[in-house]
Image 1 (cartoon, helix red, strand yellow):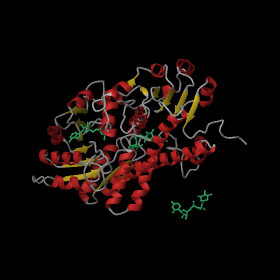
Image 2 (tube, rainbow, N blue to C red):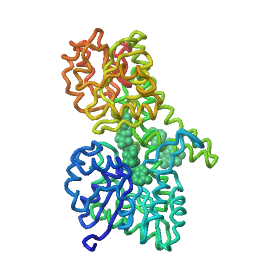
Image 3 (cartoon, rainbow, N blue to C red):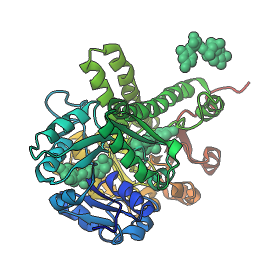
Image 4 (spheres, rainbow, N blue to C red):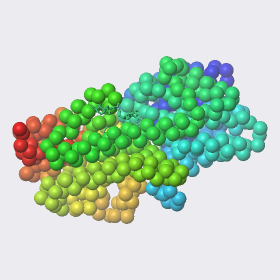
Length: 474
Ligand code: UDX
Ligand code: UDX
Ligand code: ADP
């Protein structure tokens, strides 16, 4: 109908598609946006006030636009037919088997979307890759679309998403940049301009960058690889700090004040998680290997290896400090999400620590304000290959607690694995009193006041923070 300037259909109603489309709809009342998904439950949830993902501010944005120019539907064919622009925003997980297993991204879902678009379209479309994909995926999409023999014109654009979970709405409403890659032909440039004009409704033109397709696809992988590399770099230094008496926070501050380096993403931690960092680096590694660039592949692979080391180092330190045994001991895990302000547990470092402690025979009590027990298990099954189905003892060994105090009561140690704000203001005197002694705290995010905890009586171990008694001050 004529009431809209542009009609958008987005395939995939997940962590990326949902928030991105909600913000486009909010910011552009004259653009019709419909998000479609194969998963009926997911779509039903988007149509209620119990959204399928937890993201601060998202519900308000959805409520502003839903029913006005924002819709959620499972009528994939019908919505593709109506649209001028179709976004592909489906999951592209690391392959678990076959060629490139454990490294290459599986673009099966993207290809399926392209096939559906080719099959059902009756008018020209601009097809936008939103999902993170290996470089040159646009070519595969273009070829699949071309097999449509109805004489339609399809333009493929790459428009990677840079939002971070927990701050998605801010990131979408005022992004550092929007990147649009397209073919440099007149038709390609016109398609890129059409998409740019949607974003220009709220984003200054100088922040909308256009490049060729391959630069755009590659930039997304590189941006995530650089961010993850900073975390691994500072985490490698955290290990050095614990052995030398240097303090990693002081180092981050000193190094980050160099403008050329910058202060963000230098927070030492138990390791990075999330659906993107590891996946995208492995994707980059695989890409380099594919072109015979083994040194480049090895260089980036170290970022992932350092992250694995950091996670392992954390659980090993816990066991070592607790007299080399946690068998039968109650251990409290505060935080299971891969970062604060999200319920997402994909690749969360907490899972690896829980897995290690479980293998040591500990009784584990987990509290996270947003994580659902079922999500914990499905991610553990997917990533670690263990679940209560295959490993019946797991269900009894890992309890999910209703709050932090319940999780900590009677335990030998508390590990902070997600930097939720609410963990900073817990009553640690009360927690200390309820615990077995000596009471340990392992701060995997360096968010607590360690001096104060020591005054209460805790034995505190934190990332890149040397034991105050171990090194002489000069
Ligand atoms: C460096 C540090 O910048 C400085 O803070 C420290 O005190 C001494 O070491 P310097 O070696 O004098 O200073 O020069 P710098 O500008 O850092 O360049 C070092 C090398 O890196 C040069 O060969 C330069 O050409 C190269 N470089 C730098 C690049 O190849 N690309 C870049 O983007 C930046
Ligand atoms: C990331 C990118 O930031 C985003 O641009 C891209 O679109 C998707 O991937 P996300 O994974 O949602 O976003 O969160 P991010 O804030 O980048 O954190 C990733 C992981 O790194 C988290 O586990 C976080 O705790 C960890 N991290 C981050 C650190 O350990 N230290 C830091 O200083 C920063
Ligand atoms: P991301 O973090 O990239 O957004 P998610 O897993 O959160 O990934 O979301 C991807 C969504 O894409 C899922 O809801 C999934 O059901 C949906 N999806 C996967 N394949 C298709 C497809 N061929 N057509 C429509 N939706 C799809």
